[in-house]
Length: 114
Image (cartoon, rainbow, N blue to C red; front, side):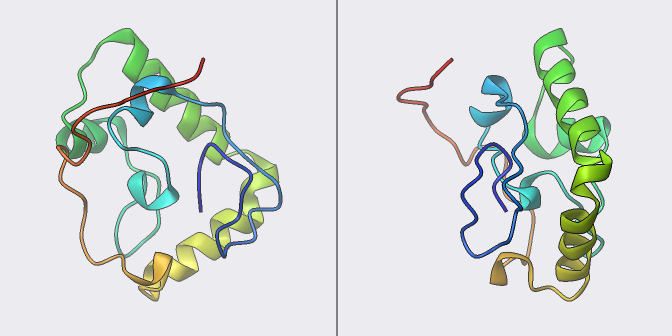
């Protein structure tokens, strides 16, 4: 499911969306599979995010990810979180989740909204 939009794309996201995080989006982080552990569906730690996406310990990227991770743990996300974990364990998440993306997937951001 998408993190920053309420569009479902085949997932019932119950109209939920996280606050937009510009610095994470410019690294290509936009879906649950981008921020979750393959095989478990657990939300990645900050150290894992740094390793996978090459994020820096600057206050903006770190604070955006901390806010995003906290939002995903809220009670209103419980049902979607449970379904996502089931899909990740069953390897059905997005129907093609086989490995973690390389951090250089996004080459250039052409436009971004505030």
